[in-house]
Length: 72
Image 1 (tube, one colour):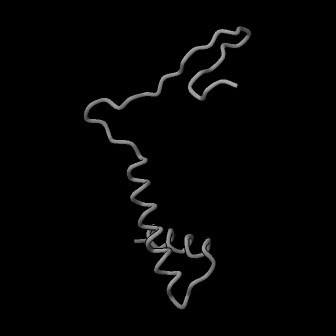
Image 2: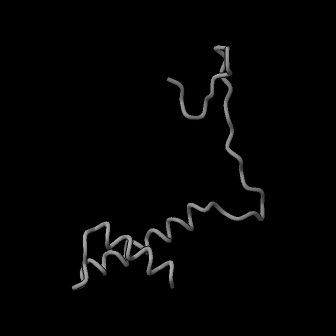
Image 3: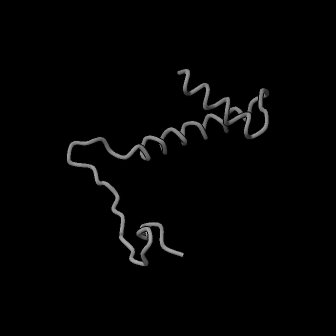
């Protein structure tokens, strides 16, 4: 088994290392930072929904929180 960053060339036993692209100065930062902040907002809202009288299952609470945040 090869590590995730190594790919075997077709028809040979040689391997080559693949490189991740890096952002140039002034480019947007990774979407992961924005996604993490958004997930935290959804998680917090889902928690508050779960504490209310309208609480559903964990999944229903999460989906409702996603929808509320998206609509805001």
